[in-house]
Image (cartoon, one colour):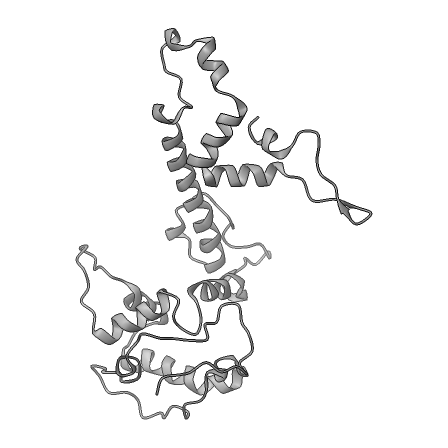
Length: 251
């Protein structure tokens, strides 16, 4: 039976109340290649059980973990890897059952009870995701541009470094785009091309418009760093009159 929204379910920022468009037989009728252990799962319950006490989830987790370990003979990491991969080691597409494809699509497209961002947030904040050395220091650096995030083992270090490195890659991409002659910031390599007319036409406003159009991520971070913390005097937000953030961002 398809789960219906339950208005009594506590709100959670990463929880979706409705899960449409997935046939019940694909979601509820597994077709494993090997027998499932004799351990019986607890009776099905309402959607509110997803947010219930941890003790209520223990039998379900036990069933899943024992199936992964004893039936599939996988580690938990192998289960996640094979569940989400779309290509094999040779770059060929992996054939998936209809059930497999439906379940993964349901989750990644944000139509499941918990969103991908919520899972990543749990990994990021989980105490086991930040192992420390005997001296108490974090084993691997956070927010690191090197080494490649795929080589970092711990969850918190790899996730924060992933964020840093994909932002860096996007900033480099934006830079290549904005420096194309057609976008107005590249004047020309030859000094003969440099004239006062060209310099004077490159005003602050036009540069700002070019950056906002072709370097939106760069502009966002630059403007954020140039903007001081808000100050409130007598209940009124103080507006900065000298060195406005937009001007500072261009310097």
